[in-house]
Image 1 (tube, one colour):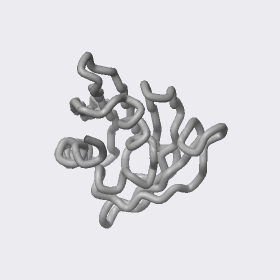
Image 2 (cartoon, one colour):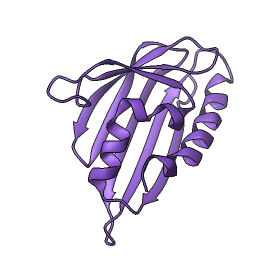
Image 3 (cartoon, rainbow, N blue to C red):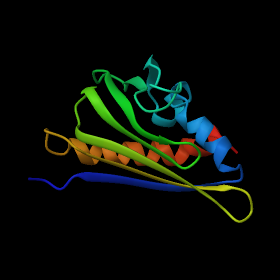
Image 4 (spheres, rainbow, N blue to C red):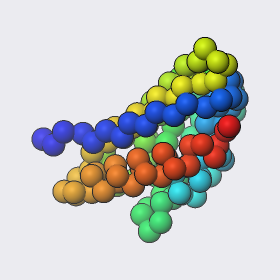
Length: 141
């Protein structure tokens, strides 16, 4: 069985964790990050963007798929998984927000997945790394 692909991006924001967390937890903000059409499907169980919230993502010609937030610890952690559709298998994402000594935020963002089509995971991994690295600074200062 192939080893799952990992995308790992870190970024330092000058904004505090609550600002960065708010920007990244809001589903509608994520379209430019992934270069995708993102639509909210459902609010979370106890908060708009919390556990159980679902977003639909449409990347170019690929079929739309849904991601569900499975962990949401305000200002510190977001975890999500693909829960419907998509060409990837075992897809998950983890965003860790750490305050910096100067009042900013260090984001550690890891995504893992595999694909049933040989070579697809590597292509998606490169595209995600490029898009996230390029567009993260635009979500929050």
